[in-house]
Length: 164
Image 1 (spheres, helix red, strand yellow):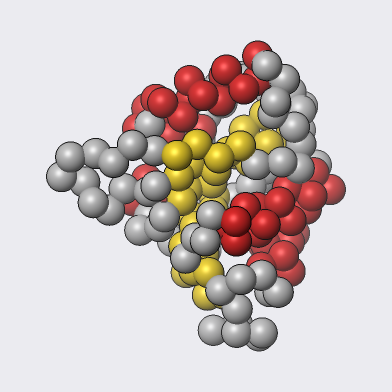
Image 2: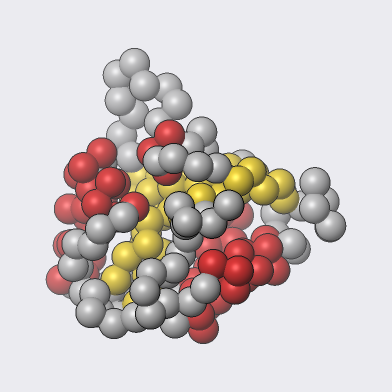
């Protein structure tokens, strides 16, 4: 367990859909635009999340720094599915580049949200690590700094595919 003893990090590869966690973090924009990566995977696997996300965008309820939590319905025979999708706004518009200050602000709310929902595990992709966005190392440090003093939690971290 890392310094502080409050969280454990598990580095994962492959699809975030295979994470054994209570919640999956979905990097989104505030305008409702569909993007490649985790957002597209989660739209296909959990269409109810995408519908709720688009509705919240139309109502202007999606804001940088604030998580949009969508509870998921249990699926027959699939006991390992997550209970929540935590939509994490990383940028205002789908055409914009993510900024590290928005990700840091969001990470604070993510930690608060995990505590509020009493989560024991969460899967987090490489938030905002796309061309023009922050570097993985900076995002990884932000995640570590944020959760160092948070409630105990297991973090299943999915670095970008090109990072070893």
